[in-house]
Image (cartoon, rainbow, N blue to C red; front, top):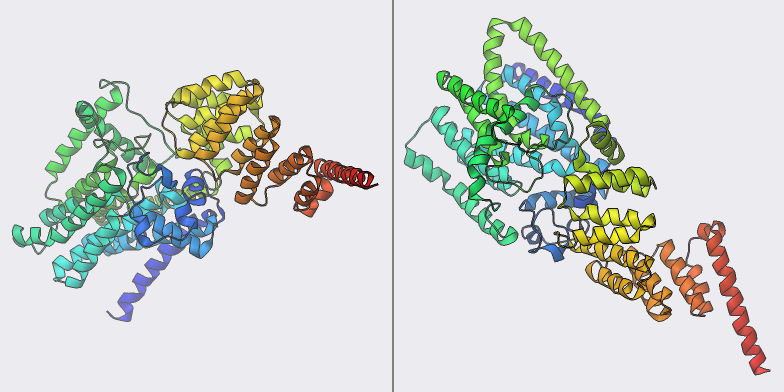
Length: 611
């Protein structure tokens, strides 16, 4: 290709890159938000060295090894934690670094989509479609919410596999075929969506391929893909305990009936993106709901239109491929998600929808070139500005996200997390309001009861706390949540004077979560209150082994040494505190005085005894 033909392409790539950088500029100063904290900051698979094989026996979303095989999320995505581990090696626990990786992956996806649409439709419309996809505000959740990375990576591999397959089939390029197979493997081990590339490839052969061979030859070509699927399902079954999410056959027809409702809700988000946030959506109350009924009628109407336009094979391919890629989240095969809708799930399906939109745009540009160009510029401007606003506000930091979701959108999916932040800030009335809402809306979430019980004990209502903890007792909990449950029960029992049983619960708490220093603080304090200073000291020391810089643990240990009349040990412990604590903290100064007075008194008694 000569230089004249290369330069326009380079400029188009540069324009796409520049526009994405501008729209996503605020994301680089953002923090870890919501599940980022649990799945990245607290995840030992990311912060500690492990063999690559370890990631392939890990169920996604379970970070405590003791919960493996007991609690299940149903997600098997080994490559995702591996990418987080690489990020950690590169950036440390720096949110800006993880976000930068997401941004780069998004950029690569947009460039691959540009190449793919240029190959299937037209280079001119490919540029516009790539820009629309790159700046679409719905995609901000996948890019700026770090743990939504699985959607970008699976899309990158799916688009790569499809592009390589097209090149391999049309040009008889065996290297491209091998690249397609490996890209498919990357897709399925990134997210379940990757499996949808197989029906998309089959659809491509039926509608778009220019080199149609025999069906037998085509099926032979799928064999490596089928082998990849077989390996994936074997590993998935071994790790998650099931090939697919368990579901009830009795609800199957109901889930199929409501699937058009989910499809059109997703299309609304793509076509009319406004008021975007982390959406919580459940099924309509009954099958006679007007939205569900209209959705079914509209779906049948669109099927009829596509049938009438069946000669436009690119449009037909785009629409069906969109549905294939959306299938995993239509809840026909139930997922573990609470909501039926999430913007991040649209990242891959939208990429294939862009092929059909590009086909329509190509026809429109022939008839109304200036009008369509004006509409495209207006749409791109709106998308870019909205994306910038979402990145600067909603997806930037945890506090802003929680406040907007709960107070701005009445999204009670976040009610418990928002209440916990209010509790941390000692805003008890607001915290209690949203804990009660969370328990009412999601009564099966144990952590809402556990955290609410902490508020109740903190505000002097231990008996009420015990009643809420008992409601959570039979709910599914992780090992750490069980530790919190027992710790909070111990605290409440001590408050009502039942020290014997309270101590037992504190002991149980550290057995469930021995790496939690706060539980050792409470156990040590409980022993001290019962006069068992020997065990109190042991508990505080175990806590210090976990968190050697914990000021509270050192102070409590020093206090226990004083009560046990081991004044020299108390002085040694207090001297381990940072200098600023020793100078400014009045409690520390008081303990120093008590320890030194006790030490002096002890020396005076020894001196008197010798005399």
